Each structure stands twice: as structure tokens, then as C-alpha cells.
Image 1 (spheres, chains in turn yellow, purple):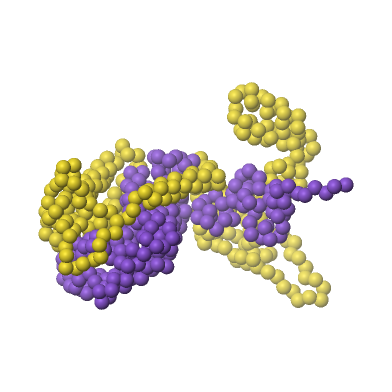
Image 2 (image 1 turned 45 degrees about the horizontal axis):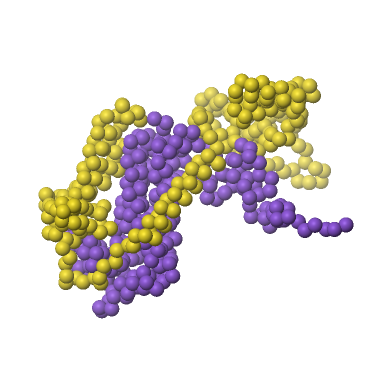
Length: 281
Length: 256
């Protein structure tokens, strides 16, 4: 039920709102508390509106856990699960290890077929307790995705688009002369993200530098969660993992930077500030 | 009595009251009449939108902190969208042919930079965006590692992520050849020469990659198809798995 439809006690609302604001509570929270108090006051004076689901519930029915955090998924009490109609199904006693959710017992009020019509009854569903996938998670400190996260993502999107477009207006992508298989430029470099490997080629046999090391890194990375069985996520409790990963990351970054900026003709060492850059994106 | 014409706002209100408008914008849409800033409508806004519903209705508050994610995964995905759009634009003007000395591909590149309306800008966006995507995916992996987000139950999503990194590199590398200039064929020659050192199946690997013994017209066509169709197709599938697993594994990891 949209909360705006609830009737409230205006007097209480004003009083509590003034109190809360006086205490220095933020406007939004203060209004919420005032509204809550006002609705309670109104109900105390006029009685509960509409049906009273908690008291009308048949014996044995435990209120189902309210929603799954979806919030506002329609109003009203959760519909009781029909476990068979009458006693015609499976004896009626739930099996399995002490279920926490119980369907209401049969009411005995089986609707009589209309006169002159065939005797039909419908079975909506039969779900064994162990067939239900239970999602258990605590509610935690959550906020609505809309607008909080969406606004952030939108801003990030704008910043990236703007940066990319502005950069692209001023900096042209390279286009050299037509490809010529008979004329090898010096140096010829791979794209920047492979320059760490090209750098490794200076030190190792190509089978090692070009095949084994990349395969090892890629497979090793994929296996990280299965090798690192330490459940901690706090950086202080996983020093070894962080050290190793940082070393690998830095190793790659340093080799890439060397390959990009410090390698010139013949892939020999150059100082970019004196001999110039031999690097194209 | 004089009839006043409706103000623009009244007109908009009337339009928003029509059946057509209401059929387009589902309940909870901020464009629908009567949107209220309540928990209910905020939830419906997420649930009833085909794009937004990749996200859950609620997220952990700490996940909003910019220094937790740096938005890197989202930026990577967004760059992929930009690259798809600019790539489709470029496909209208580019033919992956370099046969018989007539280098159609290179001529098309020149035409894109000189005569196609906005061709140069779109090509620049495509190229710089591609480099940026390699960077953002790599940094995203670093972020996920440092926050320990690959730990149970998210192990498999990390594996999918490594695959996506590999596919991103593949997409970038196959795209690198397409301009068919000196820069691209020699970069690819250097890169693929490593394939000649794969134990046991060196020749086969290289032949498969290049469609010949050297980088040539066959390579161009082969890599073009990989670049515009095959690799994006695979990437999108794994992207779907990646996003789906984020939800199924309980949303964003943490807090630390």
C-alpha cells in the first residue's frame, strides 16, 4: 500500500516532527518518525483499517518471512501455500527436517461444485520442502539502487564519454603508410599490452617467453581462487596473496613500460628523453 | 469566456495520461505520471526496466563508495557498448580486402579519416576506447583481487573474468590488424610469431591464426571476422554469465 494512502493523526505528526527537528534529526528521518507515530495514533483512535491478517491466520501458520528484500512487492499478507486439497494428498503431514515454514492446515471448506457441473478441483502446486531453494541472507545495510547507484553510474558514464570524445577530437589514431611485407620497420613492436612479453623475449627462449609464461600466467590467474583458500578479505590478513599479486602486477607493468618507452631500434635500450620515443598506440 | 490554451506542462501531463504512454512506460518508470519518490516506486523503477533490472533493487551501501569499485567493471562494460556502436558505424565504410595489391582495406581507412562524415572522430573513439578498455579490464581485475572479491562463493566468476580479459585482449589484437598499415601488420607479425613456438603444433597454430605462413590478405579476412563477429559473440555470452553470477553470488562483495 503506498504509504500516502494511510490516514494519519495530523496533530501527532506536527508534534513529533517538531520534537525530532528540535533534537537535530535530519528532515527526512524526522518526517518518517512523525508519520509512523501519527499513523499509530490514528489507528489507536480509530481502530485498524482493512482486514487483520495476523489474527485471522489459521493455527499452525507462521508468518512467512516478509519478502526477499525486493521491497514494495505488492501489499497484503503472503498467500498461504496450498498443500494439497483436503486430506487427499500424502497424509498431510510435512516430512523433512523440521521445516520452519508451515502451510496452514486444511480448512475443511472444500468448495462444492456448482449444480449440474462436473466435479472438478484444481491442485495449484505441490512443493516438497527440500525442493525449495532457500535464499538466506541478512538484510544488511542496503540502499535503493535507484537512485543512489544509478546516479553514480550515470555520472561515471558521462565522465568516460566526455573524456573519450574530447581526447578523440584532439588526438588522431595513428595510420601509417600502406602495409608492406617486404619492409620491416625498425623497431617493430607488438601492441602495448604484449610488450611485456616482447621484453621477456630478450631474456628467454621464445617457447618460454612467448608460450609457457603467458599460459602459466593466464592459467595461474584463473586458478587463484582455488589456490588461495584463505577466507579473509581484510588486506592485513592476506599479506602473502597481496604481496605475490602486487609483485606480478608490478613485474608486468615495469616490463610493459620498458617495452613501450625504453626500447628503440633493434629493440635496444634507449632513453626516451634523449633519443626520443619509439612507441605508437 | 475565453479558452486558454494548455501550458506545455499541462500538455505533457495529458500526453502522459494516454493509454499509449502508459503502455510504453511500465509502473515505476520515472516518466510515468504519478511517480512518487517512495521505496515502492524506487523498487519498481529497477524491476520494470529491461536495462536496470541487471541490478538488484537494493545494493549494499558500502558498494556505493567510489574507492571500493572505482566503477571499473561498469566502465569496462560501457566501453564495450561504445566500441560496439562505433564499430558498427565503421563497418559501413570498411572492407577487409587486401588482395592482389589492391589494398581496399587501407584505402577505406583513408576514406574514413578524410571523407566520411565524422569518420575520423568515430575511428579515434574506437581506437582510444579499445586501449582504454584493455586498461580498465586489467585494473578491474586488480580491484577484484585487492578486495578479495574472488573468494567463495565468487570463485567461478573470477575464472569467467579471466576469460573475459583474454577475450578483450583478443578483440583488441584482432582489431589492431584491420587498418592494414605498416604499424598493424608488423605488430601482428611480431605478436603471432610467438605462435611458431608452441610445442608440437607450432606450424598448425600459426597457419590457423594467419591463414597462411605470413600475415596476408587471408589473415585480414580471418581476423576481421573474429573481430566483428566471433569474439564479440563469445564475449557477450560470458558477459551475461559474469553479470548473472554477480547477482547469484550475492551482489557486490565486501565490505572489507
